Image (tube, rainbow, N blue to C red; front, side, top):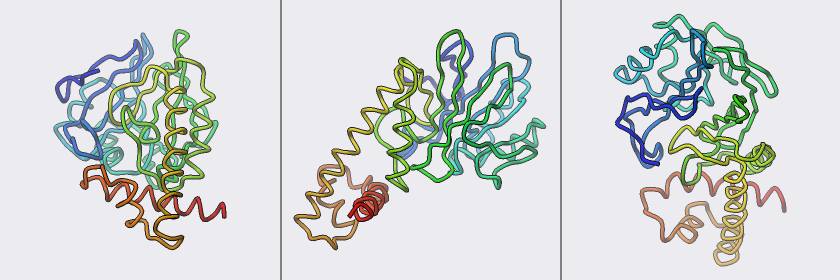
Length: 258
């Protein structure tokens, strides 16, 4: 699905709309998806991941109407940096897994239910991309909606900090109901999040096999950079640096497994 022009509020379902921030890059794809959630008839809304402190984008976010709550999926600045500005402008609390990101609200934790804008939003702690990554789930009119931040992207794969945590998080997402609507932090929405999570898990197993093969070729003490040069030889070199972070996580995982 093609993205619209930046700053245009695009409905994805009767309760979820997206504002695309104008910050495209190799890491952010078309840009950061700022999600606006509101049950039919609710006066206020929930904003998820306001993005950078980009005043043009934040002014558009502020224009969606009364904001009851700002939620953050994780601490990376392309998701969280603009939250304090928006909170002050709209008089809305900010809540996140990391208490240092919170403003006027308590941290959110795994299994917690957050009630706002006529919705009951369940928090799932899904570390792996970062230690503080969360996924936000709610149901409306028989359809499960899941905001994944950077844990699952609309296309491509995410950078990892801890592979063991990430594989466990994928297992959690694989267990979601069939045809759950995935609302990612970057890229287009996903029509069946559980199926995508299974594809991610399979991809990670394939990458692990490639890393194992590279270690057999290079030696057990090979550096992450050396492994990247073998495993990602056909990938654009502009992506080697983020790939190296994921390879570090893969090497740590393999070495912890003996």
